[in-house]
Length: 323
Ligand SMILES: [Fe+2]
Ligand SMILES: [Fe+2]
Image (cartoon, rainbow, N blue to C red; front, side, top):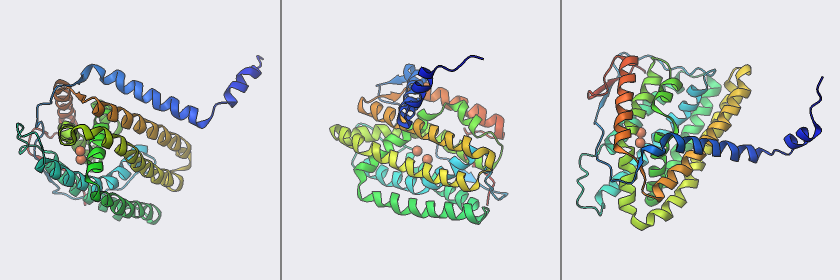
């Protein structure tokens, strides 16, 4: 039998956790650049791209989280985070519209404010259903996280410029973190949970250029300062979210999935860090996803959504069923 060389064992034992962290962040960063670089542009985007839709929920059903599904746990925490976060988006977006120095652009048909208001409202309903239908232990974890987000994130309204940087960064992260087809793989079911997130992600693609464009025009040369200040805050927001996710995995996930889910959470955090850095760099250099690729992604998203839910996102109504 061949012996493993002692030099190899020595080399492995010198690897520290931060080597792995930097390696994973680099891999995610390079992958995102590789997938997106040919679609980036410095041109002013054609806006608005989105539609102001309504959401109907005619046949309510309870939403119950499956703790052996990593993405259901992950996105439940995102759903809780999004309610106060998107309320803040409304606030800073209002401020930037009112004080937009670019008088040549008419922003009255922009959809970000309208869409985020509805996202916040629908996610609040979804969260209440999840909490109502969860058991005692997970219910407590969700309620503590919800309370924490509401206090901590609402506190940011006193610093609207910093929030505008956080919004510009975070909105771009959503666009760059997964491709359209990945979203449909991560959220594979025909249920209300997947439908709410897929409808939401579709609208995030529709309006992500609005948030970065308005931020760049409104902040002018101050943008560098606010990008640098807000990126660590977006990171902190995600770190706290993933920490609550880890607590849930430790207490709620079936034993065989605990280690894989903890490793997946760590990898996910590294992926988010890579996206925050990428998003900050794009804002720094006034770079956006091009109109062509956004329109292509929207068309693909509509096709996949129609195939899954037999409903068109070209219409002004979306139907979800939860109570
Ligand atoms: Fe949203
Ligand atoms: Fe958004």
